[in-house]
Image (cartoon, rainbow, N blue to C red):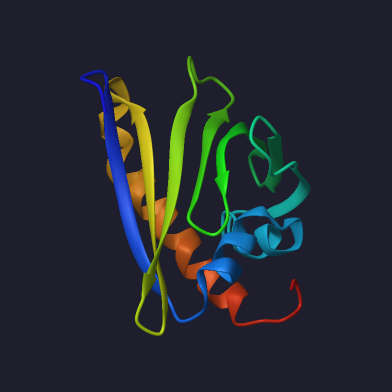
Length: 147
């Protein structure tokens, strides 16, 4: 972390192997189940999960389409996934790192969102957003529909 960025983190335990959780981050079918819960239907999910590969999500919301995109920086299954994070209007991309750690009866996932310090007022909202998505991922992981 540099002086011009802040790290916003959240941690969640999942009672499943790290490989399954890692795959939930890069499977379009799984992402449709946990990304932006309650905010709208994902109408576009494109994932090229390799280093320098890209992703693009479009979520249809009541106030218009929200687009999220980025590039994978690290793809190290099942230990680490890191990617840039962009939304319309951002001056520069944030960086999100997903660390998966072995834990009793499953794994722990730590999501760290490195953001511009000028946007510190969004830190709590960002943390809560990732926490909601991890909760939704937990529900998705309990289904076999995407596997």
